[in-house]
Length: 251
Image (cartoon, rainbow, N blue to C red):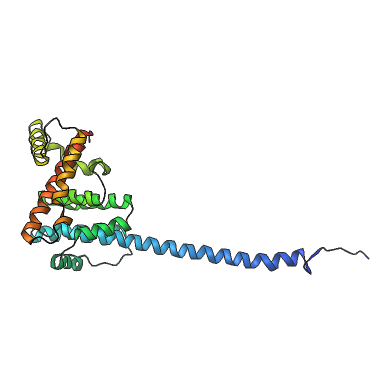
Protein backbone atom coordinates (compact mmCIF):
# COMPACT_ATOMS: atom_id res chain seq x y z
CA UNK A 1 0.00 0.00 0.00
CA UNK A 2 1.34 3.38 -1.01
CA UNK A 3 0.99 6.42 1.15
CA UNK A 4 0.89 9.91 -0.41
CA UNK A 5 2.32 12.57 1.81
CA UNK A 6 0.30 15.80 1.53
CA UNK A 7 1.79 18.97 2.95
CA UNK A 8 -0.67 20.78 5.14
CA UNK A 9 -0.94 24.55 5.72
CA UNK A 10 -2.66 25.65 8.87
CA UNK A 11 -4.32 22.26 9.13
CA UNK A 12 -5.41 22.33 5.42
CA UNK A 13 -4.01 20.75 2.28
CA UNK A 14 -2.79 22.97 -0.61
CA UNK A 15 -6.00 22.23 -2.50
CA UNK A 16 -8.21 23.06 0.45
CA UNK A 17 -6.21 26.23 1.08
CA UNK A 18 -6.55 27.33 -2.57
CA UNK A 19 -10.32 26.89 -2.70
CA UNK A 20 -10.85 28.40 0.73
CA UNK A 21 -9.10 31.67 -0.09
CA UNK A 22 -9.27 32.01 -3.87
CA UNK A 23 -13.03 31.68 -4.32
CA UNK A 24 -13.88 34.68 -2.07
CA UNK A 25 -11.20 36.73 -3.85
CA UNK A 26 -12.69 35.88 -7.25
CA UNK A 27 -16.16 36.83 -6.00
CA UNK A 28 -14.86 40.18 -4.74
CA UNK A 29 -13.13 40.89 -8.08
CA UNK A 30 -16.29 40.08 -10.04
CA UNK A 31 -18.34 42.34 -7.76
CA UNK A 32 -15.78 45.12 -8.17
CA UNK A 33 -15.92 44.77 -11.97
CA UNK A 34 -19.70 45.17 -12.08
CA UNK A 35 -19.56 48.07 -9.61
CA UNK A 36 -17.05 49.96 -11.74
CA UNK A 37 -19.08 49.19 -14.84
CA UNK A 38 -22.24 50.41 -13.15
CA UNK A 39 -20.69 53.73 -12.11
CA UNK A 40 -19.04 54.15 -15.50
CA UNK A 41 -22.45 53.86 -17.13
CA UNK A 42 -23.92 56.24 -14.58
CA UNK A 43 -21.16 58.80 -15.18
CA UNK A 44 -21.64 58.45 -18.92
CA UNK A 45 -25.36 59.11 -18.57
CA UNK A 46 -24.78 62.15 -16.36
CA UNK A 47 -22.19 63.38 -18.79
CA UNK A 48 -24.68 63.15 -21.65
CA UNK A 49 -27.27 64.93 -19.50
CA UNK A 50 -24.82 67.77 -18.81
CA UNK A 51 -24.10 68.22 -22.51
CA UNK A 52 -27.78 68.03 -23.49
CA UNK A 53 -28.75 70.54 -20.81
CA UNK A 54 -26.09 73.03 -21.95
CA UNK A 55 -26.94 72.50 -25.63
CA UNK A 56 -30.69 73.03 -25.18
CA UNK A 57 -30.46 75.95 -22.74
CA UNK A 58 -27.79 77.87 -24.66
CA UNK A 59 -29.37 76.90 -27.98
CA UNK A 60 -32.70 78.30 -26.78
CA UNK A 61 -30.98 81.49 -25.69
CA UNK A 62 -29.34 81.75 -29.11
CA UNK A 63 -32.58 81.59 -31.09
CA UNK A 64 -35.28 83.07 -28.87
CA UNK A 65 -35.37 86.45 -30.65
CA UNK A 66 -35.96 84.87 -34.04
CA UNK A 67 -39.37 84.96 -35.73
CA UNK A 68 -41.79 82.15 -34.93
CA UNK A 69 -41.07 80.21 -38.12
CA UNK A 70 -37.28 80.22 -37.57
CA UNK A 71 -37.66 79.30 -33.90
CA UNK A 72 -39.79 76.30 -34.85
CA UNK A 73 -37.29 75.29 -37.54
CA UNK A 74 -34.30 75.54 -35.21
CA UNK A 75 -36.03 73.75 -32.32
CA UNK A 76 -36.80 70.92 -34.73
CA UNK A 77 -33.13 70.81 -35.79
CA UNK A 78 -31.96 70.75 -32.15
CA UNK A 79 -34.37 67.95 -31.29
CA UNK A 80 -33.32 65.82 -34.28
CA UNK A 81 -29.61 66.37 -33.64
CA UNK A 82 -29.68 65.55 -29.93
CA UNK A 83 -32.03 62.56 -30.22
CA UNK A 84 -29.82 61.07 -32.90
CA UNK A 85 -26.73 61.47 -30.73
CA UNK A 86 -28.40 60.53 -27.41
CA UNK A 87 -31.31 58.23 -28.36
CA UNK A 88 -32.06 57.15 -24.80
CA UNK A 89 -32.12 60.62 -23.24
CA UNK A 90 -35.34 62.13 -21.97
CA UNK A 91 -35.84 65.86 -22.52
CA UNK A 92 -38.56 68.23 -23.72
CA UNK A 93 -36.96 70.87 -25.93
CA UNK A 94 -40.13 72.93 -26.31
CA UNK A 95 -40.61 73.15 -22.54
CA UNK A 96 -36.98 74.08 -21.89
CA UNK A 97 -37.20 76.75 -24.58
CA UNK A 98 -40.30 78.24 -22.93
CA UNK A 99 -38.57 78.24 -19.53
CA UNK A 100 -35.55 80.06 -20.99
CA UNK A 101 -37.78 82.67 -22.65
CA UNK A 102 -39.87 83.24 -19.51
CA UNK A 103 -37.17 83.08 -16.82
CA UNK A 104 -33.97 83.96 -18.67
CA UNK A 105 -30.49 82.57 -18.01
CA UNK A 106 -27.67 83.96 -15.87
CA UNK A 107 -24.87 83.39 -18.38
CA UNK A 108 -22.09 83.99 -15.86
CA UNK A 109 -23.36 81.33 -13.46
CA UNK A 110 -24.38 78.95 -16.22
CA UNK A 111 -21.02 79.08 -18.00
CA UNK A 112 -19.24 78.64 -14.67
CA UNK A 113 -21.26 75.45 -14.18
CA UNK A 114 -20.46 74.30 -17.72
CA UNK A 115 -16.75 74.83 -17.06
CA UNK A 116 -17.01 72.60 -14.01
CA UNK A 117 -18.96 69.77 -15.62
CA UNK A 118 -17.82 69.63 -19.26
CA UNK A 119 -14.42 68.65 -20.59
CA UNK A 120 -12.65 70.87 -23.12
CA UNK A 121 -13.60 68.47 -25.92
CA UNK A 122 -17.28 68.62 -24.93
CA UNK A 123 -17.18 72.42 -24.67
CA UNK A 124 -15.73 72.60 -28.18
CA UNK A 125 -18.46 70.24 -29.38
CA UNK A 126 -21.04 72.45 -27.63
CA UNK A 127 -19.80 75.58 -29.40
CA UNK A 128 -19.72 73.84 -32.77
CA UNK A 129 -23.29 72.67 -32.12
CA UNK A 130 -24.36 76.28 -31.44
CA UNK A 131 -22.69 77.55 -34.61
CA UNK A 132 -24.43 74.88 -36.68
CA UNK A 133 -27.72 75.73 -34.99
CA UNK A 134 -27.34 79.41 -35.86
CA UNK A 135 -26.49 78.45 -39.43
CA UNK A 136 -29.55 76.25 -40.06
CA UNK A 137 -31.24 79.07 -41.98
CA UNK A 138 -28.14 79.79 -44.09
CA UNK A 139 -26.10 82.18 -41.99
CA UNK A 140 -25.21 83.49 -38.53
CA UNK A 141 -26.85 86.82 -37.72
CA UNK A 142 -24.95 89.54 -35.75
CA UNK A 143 -26.74 88.85 -32.46
CA UNK A 144 -25.98 85.13 -32.68
CA UNK A 145 -22.38 85.89 -33.57
CA UNK A 146 -21.95 88.16 -30.55
CA UNK A 147 -23.40 85.56 -28.20
CA UNK A 148 -21.21 82.81 -29.66
CA UNK A 149 -18.04 84.86 -29.24
CA UNK A 150 -19.07 85.75 -25.68
CA UNK A 151 -19.64 82.07 -24.86
CA UNK A 152 -16.27 81.13 -26.37
CA UNK A 153 -14.61 83.52 -23.95
CA UNK A 154 -16.66 82.40 -20.95
CA UNK A 155 -15.85 78.74 -21.67
CA UNK A 156 -12.11 79.51 -21.92
CA UNK A 157 -12.01 78.63 -25.63
CA UNK A 158 -10.62 80.41 -28.68
CA UNK A 159 -11.71 80.65 -32.28
CA UNK A 160 -8.76 78.46 -33.26
CA UNK A 161 -10.08 75.62 -31.08
CA UNK A 162 -13.00 75.15 -33.46
CA UNK A 163 -12.95 73.10 -36.63
CA UNK A 164 -11.97 75.06 -39.77
CA UNK A 165 -15.40 74.48 -41.33
CA UNK A 166 -17.06 75.96 -38.23
CA UNK A 167 -14.77 79.00 -38.32
CA UNK A 168 -15.77 79.54 -41.94
CA UNK A 169 -19.42 79.68 -40.88
CA UNK A 170 -18.61 82.35 -38.29
CA UNK A 171 -16.40 84.27 -40.73
CA UNK A 172 -17.62 83.32 -44.21
CA UNK A 173 -14.89 83.22 -46.85
CA UNK A 174 -17.15 84.87 -49.42
CA UNK A 175 -17.13 88.08 -47.36
CA UNK A 176 -13.34 88.20 -47.12
CA UNK A 177 -12.60 90.59 -49.98
CA UNK A 178 -9.65 92.90 -49.35
CA UNK A 179 -11.97 95.86 -48.96
CA UNK A 180 -14.24 94.17 -46.42
CA UNK A 181 -11.26 92.88 -44.45
CA UNK A 182 -9.74 96.35 -44.24
CA UNK A 183 -13.06 97.81 -43.11
CA UNK A 184 -13.48 95.08 -40.48
CA UNK A 185 -9.92 95.51 -39.23
CA UNK A 186 -10.38 99.28 -38.99
CA UNK A 187 -13.57 98.81 -37.01
CA UNK A 188 -12.03 96.27 -34.63
CA UNK A 189 -8.91 98.39 -34.10
CA UNK A 190 -11.11 101.38 -33.29
CA UNK A 191 -13.14 99.24 -30.86
CA UNK A 192 -9.98 98.34 -28.93
CA UNK A 193 -8.53 101.83 -29.30
CA UNK A 194 -5.23 100.72 -30.86
CA UNK A 195 -3.26 101.60 -33.99
CA UNK A 196 -3.12 99.47 -37.12
CA UNK A 197 0.42 98.31 -36.37
CA UNK A 198 -0.41 97.19 -32.82
CA UNK A 199 1.42 94.10 -31.62
CA UNK A 200 -0.25 91.05 -30.06
CA UNK A 201 0.93 92.28 -26.65
CA UNK A 202 -0.66 95.70 -27.24
CA UNK A 203 -3.91 94.10 -28.39
CA UNK A 204 -4.01 91.91 -25.30
CA UNK A 205 -3.30 94.88 -23.01
CA UNK A 206 -6.02 97.01 -24.61
CA UNK A 207 -8.50 94.14 -24.49
CA UNK A 208 -7.89 93.38 -20.81
CA UNK A 209 -8.22 97.04 -19.87
CA UNK A 210 -11.54 97.50 -21.69
CA UNK A 211 -12.92 94.08 -20.70
CA UNK A 212 -12.29 94.89 -17.05
CA UNK A 213 -14.27 98.13 -17.40
CA UNK A 214 -17.27 96.61 -19.17
CA UNK A 215 -17.37 93.06 -17.78
CA UNK A 216 -20.94 92.17 -16.66
CA UNK A 217 -19.66 90.98 -13.26
CA UNK A 218 -18.62 94.55 -12.45
CA UNK A 219 -22.08 95.98 -13.09
CA UNK A 220 -24.42 93.65 -11.21
CA UNK A 221 -26.00 96.58 -9.30
CA UNK A 222 -26.38 98.90 -12.27
CA UNK A 223 -29.75 99.69 -13.88
CA UNK A 224 -31.08 97.30 -16.54
CA UNK A 225 -30.29 99.84 -19.27
CA UNK A 226 -26.70 100.25 -18.06
CA UNK A 227 -26.27 96.49 -17.76
CA UNK A 228 -27.37 95.98 -21.37
CA UNK A 229 -25.02 98.73 -22.57
CA UNK A 230 -22.04 97.19 -20.77
CA UNK A 231 -22.88 93.67 -22.02
CA UNK A 232 -23.14 94.95 -25.61
CA UNK A 233 -19.82 96.79 -25.28
CA UNK A 234 -18.15 93.79 -23.66
CA UNK A 235 -19.30 91.51 -26.50
CA UNK A 236 -18.08 94.05 -29.06
CA UNK A 237 -14.65 94.26 -27.39
CA UNK A 238 -14.39 90.49 -27.16
CA UNK A 239 -15.31 89.97 -30.79
CA UNK A 240 -12.79 92.61 -31.93
CA UNK A 241 -10.01 90.95 -29.93
CA UNK A 242 -10.89 87.46 -31.21
CA UNK A 243 -10.97 88.63 -34.83
CA UNK A 244 -7.73 90.61 -34.72
CA UNK A 245 -5.73 87.96 -32.88
CA UNK A 246 -7.09 85.09 -34.99
CA UNK A 247 -6.03 86.84 -38.20
CA UNK A 248 -2.68 87.71 -36.65
CA UNK A 249 -2.17 84.02 -35.91
CA UNK A 250 -3.08 83.10 -39.49
CA UNK A 251 -6.47 81.54 -38.73
